[in-house]
Image (tube, rainbow, N blue to C red):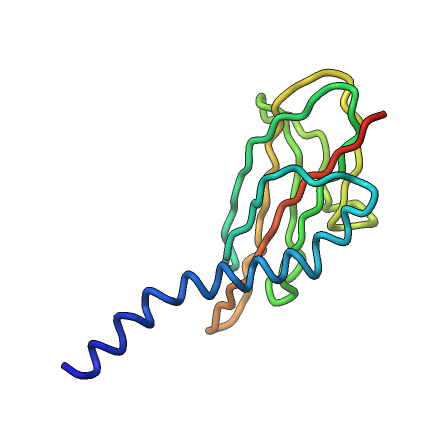
Length: 141
């Protein structure tokens, strides 16, 4: 019974600690990649494991230049991301890009786009988890 009173608080603290690590990772590793762009006010991070996929629906406004930064902990390997419209038509994929974590583009009309992130599956008995962050920055033309 004494052990239970120590285990339960630890179980509640684990998600808080993971979120704090994600915020520190985002601030130190991802935010500097938005240099020259103004970050939107959204914080889009999640702790993912190999094989996970996440989607984020965002609105982009005409007359602005945008930068999308997708940062991930190195333990997750080469995280793939793509930008698709609401009809699931591909706009960009980092699979063939030189810079695997940053994409710059201009919007000619306002529309909603989906950022889809995939963590590659890994072979092995131990599955590591890591933070994946999607940041969006903009600037006027």
